[in-house]
Image 1: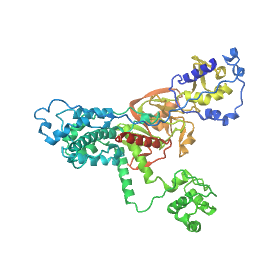
Image 2: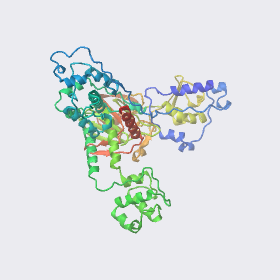
Image 3: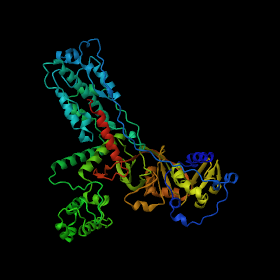
Image 4: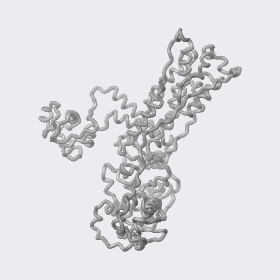
Length: 624
C-alpha cells in the first residue's frame, strides 16, 4: 500500500462526525442520483481546480490509485451454544444437623444420597454451581425422588417441562432420562445411582428453564452483530428451595413465564394455531418453497399451483376459467389456458398479471401456513424475552418487518406510522435505547460507510461535485472546497450537508444516542412510503409523519413543531422526559387490539434464530 493510499484510508475512517451532528445514515436523493449514475449525469461537469495536495504531487493523473476500500456491516455467525461442564457434588464428611429434614429421611433416601457424588450430569456453569451448592448441603432434602422412585412432585415437574412448547420453548431442552422402575437384582445399587442422576438432572433442567423463560434460551448477540442486548441476569439461587416448599411445582414454573400483554397474546395465538391444526379435517394448501413457474414450463409444482388456485380463487374466476380448471388432470405442463387463469388471479390480487408464479403469487395463494405462523411465533416468543419484562407505559416501538413505528402512552397505542428501515445490505439493528433529543433543521454528517462505499468512487472521478450540491467539506479543521481536496491521498476530512429542502434528514431527526448511529428522521424521499416493502435505507428509520412523532415525544403539538422548523435554525431540544425506544424485529406481533399479525422476514433473521435453537438443543442433549 502506498503512503498516499494510507492517508486516504485514514481520512475516510475519520470522516464520520460533522460539527453539531451525530453520524447518521440516510442520503439525499440528489446525492444518491449522482452516486448511482441517475439524474446526476445531467449535471454539466465543471473543470476541477488542482487540489491543495495534488498541486505539489501531481494529483491523480500521476498514476492509478489502489483499489477502493469498502466498509461492510455486521455478519451472521455460526451459533455456539453456552458451554456446559460436569456437575461435581462434594458430599460433606459431617452428618446432617439435628432437626434437619435429612435426619428424618428414610434409610433408602440416606442410602441413595451417597451416590450424589457419582452423577454424570452436565449444565452451564451458573446452573452447575447452584445445583452443587444445594446438594452439597447435608441439610437439604431431595426434591424429585424419595429413595424408592420418582416422587409425585418429580412427576408433576416432568409433565410441566414437557409443556414448554406452549410458551415457545422446546421440551427437548428440558428432557431427562427416567430411572428404571425396579431395582436390578444383580446390581441393587444401580437404581439408586440412576435415581440420583435423575434428581440432579431434573434440578439442572428446571433451573435452565427458569433462566430461559425469563431471558430467552439463546444469546442474540451470538447470532449476529445486528443484535445489541445485555443478557439478562436471572437469580436462580433460591429456586430449588422454593420448589421443594411449593405445593404445586407446575404452577410455580408457569408463574415464572413472562406476563406482558404482548407475550400473552403471542402465547394464546400459538395455542389457537396448534388446536386448529389438531382439529383440521382438510389438508392445508402447500406449494413447495422456492417454486418459480413460468408460462410454457413443465414442472411438478404446476399441480400444487392449480390445486391452490382452485381452493382460493374467487367464484367469478373459477366460473370464467372453469373449462381449463375442470379439465386439468395434474400434469406438469403449464399450458396457456392455465396461465390465463393464474393471470386472472394475479390481477384480482393487485399483482403483475404475467402468469409467473413466484413468491408474491404463492403468498397470495397460500398466505402464511399454520406451520409458518407457528415458527414465527416461536421466534417472537423468544425475542420478546430479550426485552424488558415490562415495556413501560410510554414508549416508541419500531417493528422492522412491519415497517411501522408506534407511539404508546398510558399503556395504549396512540400513534402508528409507516417507516422505511435499512435495506438487506444495510440492516437496521435490533436494540433498545432512550429518546433524548429532537433536532430541528439538522445537518447531515456523512457516515464513513457512505463516504467510503459510495462517495469516494465519484469523488476520485469528479472532486468538485460536492461543491455543486452544496455540501460542506472540512480539511484539517478548515473549511475548503471539495475540489481542493485530493480524494486519493488526504486526511482529517469531514463532510456534511447543511439544512435545507434537499437535506437527507429532512426537517428533523429524533435522537437516541447509540453506537450504531441509528435514529429516526424525516426524508425528502416521500414516495418510498407508498411501497409495501420499505427496507430501503442505509440503516436509520425514516418516518412518514416526522412532525407527528416529534410532537408526541416532545409532549407538544404539531403546530409548535412546525414553528421550530419554520425558524430555519439548526437547533437541538431535549425531550422533557427520556422515552424508551425499542428498535425491534418481530415477524409476529399483536396489534393494538391484541390480534397477532404476521410479516415477511425481510432480513432472513428468523432462520438464523431457528439454527441457534437447534444448536442449543443439541448442546443440551445428554452425552452418550
